[in-house]
Length: 94
Image (cartoon, rainbow, N blue to C red; front, side, top):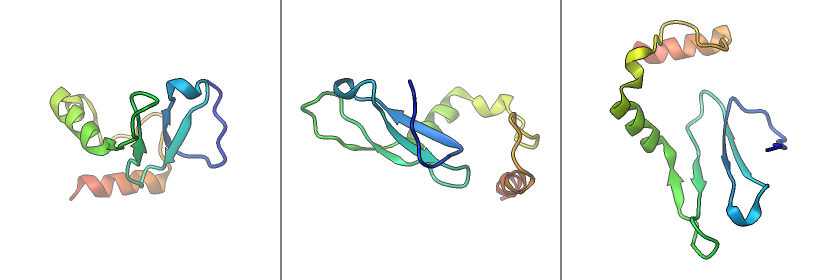
């Protein structure tokens, strides 16, 4: 799916509604920003509730034990800038 975006972002969420395909709404966010809430409808007639994905992602990570296999003290791939990596390390020391 081609993505047109005016602002670069570290991460993005794409919402592609069936009635609007191949277009999609892009929610971009950066490492230090919270995961944005998104509007999501199941059908064309539905009102679009606001979906807060952060608690959902937290639950998935907790229930799957994904953190067990990750070394948060090492640089991820692709690597973060020194400033961003330092910020991540500061979160681990809380």
